[in-house]
Image 1 (cartoon, rainbow, N blue to C red):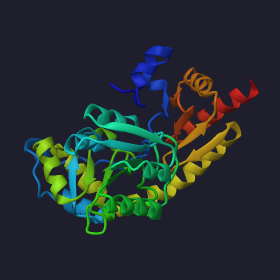
Image 2 (spheres, helix red, strand yellow):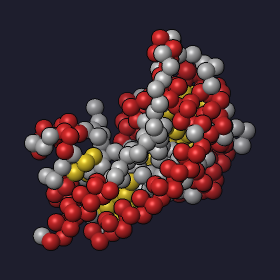
Image 3 (cartoon, rainbow, N blue to C red):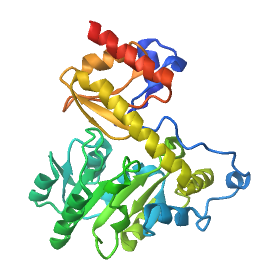
Image 4 (cartoon, rainbow, N blue to C red):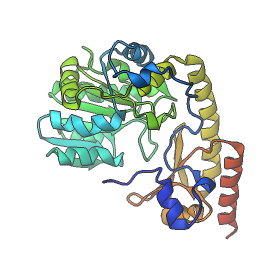
Length: 328
């Protein structure tokens, strides 16, 4: 099983620091997520079923009704490669490692290219990218992504876009066109785990053509998302006031984090995390971890991903740890 951020208990045991004393910046999840209200007893007592308003709320929020709710985007990542003919997929890398692992397990070949134009030039039937990219924080312009979908369509190929981190900047999103007559070969994955801060609910969506969604639904089986998770997702997707306020706050906090990390090396940022490019990622990771601050280190290429503190005390703690490094 691949390693992910958020392994706080593992870090607590390794560094001998109690779980409650950690500042977890390893995941890129909104630290001030949507406030979940008490739920009616019926959502715990009844089997989940369509028609409860979730699909309608998602269609309005995302601008596309050609969708399928899933148990987080992870369920789709693991299953989609099994539904497509075996071939080669060009991955714009680095990217979320579960993607290439899922394609490999399903019998596909993977190629790793560092830009979207190079991925298209590889002439593979499938191209995969994350936008914004996890973990590098690079962005692809919406026009460039749609042009890539058009080029692949002309040669019978598919474009898959993971937009798990796009909610704070919806101008980058191509979700509204996935599976439509304008982009029938476009597949988009979305998640409520990052922007909404509801990673534990395990709710995601796949946007694609109806035929592919039907096969995916058959492969995943009934009750893909629990009743309580469906209710929470429906309410969060309808809360436009919270969404607008969260986007404003995340924009401010992202810039604060970028400025904080800039003296240490090259920094790229999304609204939910910043990524530091430096050959000293292991040293940085250890320096912060010994102070109870968990970040995510990537060995190749050498990157350190840092999420947003959730309160002023967290910001001050991170600032103090960075200053301690600079003094040494």
